[in-house]
Amino acid sequence: WAWKPLPFTIPDAQNEQAQFIAPFELDPNDPNRLLGGAMSLWRTNDAKRPNRTNPPDGPSWAAIKDPIGSNPRVHSITAIAIAYGNADIVVVGHANGDIYRTTNATATDPTWQQIDTNGINANRQCLALTIDPDDHDLIYAAYGGFQADNLWRTTDGGQSWTNIGGALPETPVRDITVHPQRSRWLYLATDVGVFASEDGGDHWSPTNEGPANVACRDFFWLGPKLVCATHGRGMFEIDLTIPDAFPAPVLAFTGTEHGTVQGNAFTRYKLSVTNRAAYPDSLFRPSPDLPPCGLNTSASRTWVDIYNGDTNQRIYGFCAFDSADDLDQLWFALPEGDTPPSSVYAVLRDRRCNVTYTSNSTPISVGSFTLTLWSLNWLWGYTIIRARLENPAGASVAPENGVVINLSLSTPGRVTSQLGQMRWHQSWRSFYWYLRNAPAQSK
Image (cartoon, rainbow, N blue to C red):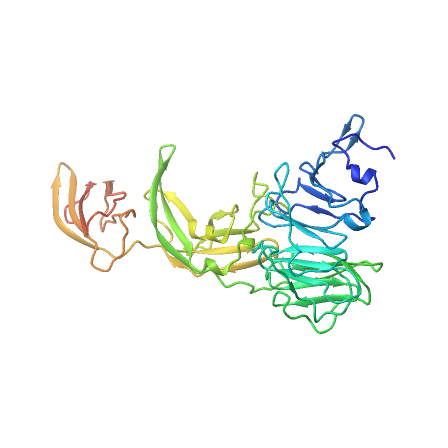
C-alpha cells in the first residue's frame, strides 16, 4: 500500500486501529460531510473531492473525537448516527458498549459526553444507533450478543435509558431504522430476520417478518421502500408507502399586502395551513439527497404548490422550507390591479415517498362591502362618479389589507382613473371615478 500524506489519509486505518468493517456515515444534511469511525472519530467536509496520488489530493480528514482507550477490539468506534435536521448532534457507539454524544459536531474540536451510564450496562459491542428525525433527544441503541437486552431507548438525550427489547429473541440487533412517514414505526435488522414496531418500540411484531431465512445486517431507504442487506443472500426490498400518513392541509386566506419591485406594484395574497401542527418538521427539512430546486441544492423534502381554483393551473410554489411552521407563510402575488382567482388550493408533495396531500379550495375575498352612489356629474367629456364604500358591521378587514375596486359599465366607455387600492383606517371611505366618453346615465 502507498499511503497519502496528511490530511488526505486516516492514520487509524494505516495503523490498523479500527474494526474489520469500520463504520462510515454520510451527513444527511450535507453530502460533502462524511464521518468515519476508528479509534478516533474522523471527519471530512469535502467527501466529493476527487482522489489523486500525484500530487496527493482528495478528501481532507481531521479527528474530532479522541480515543477512549488503546485496544481497537474494545475501544474502537462501531456505530455512528447524525441527526437529520441538525448536523451538530452526533452520537457514536464503541466496541465496549460506551455511547458518546455531542451537540456541536461541526465545530473544530467538538465537546463529547458519555450518555450510557444511567440505565445501560451492556458491556458488549454497540452495533447501531438511530436518532429520531423529529425529536433529537430520542435515541435508539442496538447491541450485539446472543443474549437479552439488546435494544435500548432514551427520550432525554441519554440522561436515562429504557430497555425496549424484552420481547425480542436473544439475538444481535444489527440495525434499526425509522419509517420516513411515521417516526414511531421502527424496523430492526437481526440475525433471525426483521422485526417491526408501530409504537416506538413498546411492542414488536410477534414473529420475525424477514425477507428470507437469513441474517439481516443493514437497512437503507429508497424513497418509501425499505431495503435489507443480508449476510450472503443479497438484498431484499419492501414498499412501505402510507398514502394517508398525514391529513389533508386546511388552507385559509389571511389577507393581502402591497409592495413594489423595481417600480412595479404588486398585491400579495397571504395564505396559511391552519392544521400545520399535524405535520412533522422532518417532512419539510432540507434534503440535499433529493433533486435540487434550481440552484438550491438543499431544497426541502416536501414542496408546496398553489393552484388557481378556477382553472387548476399552478400559480406559485415553495421548495425551500425548514419546518412545518413555514406553512403559515404561504402566498401568491399578482400585479396591482389584476383580479385574483376566486379561490385557490395548495398541494403538498412529499418527494421522498412520492405522496401528495391536497387542501380545500379557499375563497380569495377581503370581506363584504356596500357601495353607495353619492353623485353623478358630467364635465368636459368626463363622467364623474362619486361613491361611498362602507364596511358593514361584521365584515372583517384588517387595517393592513388593501381593497381593489374595479368598475364595469353598462354602455361603452373607458375608465381613465380608478381606485387601485386603499387601506382601512375607518369603517368607510369615499372616492371618485373619472370616465372618458361615457354618458352620465351609465353607472
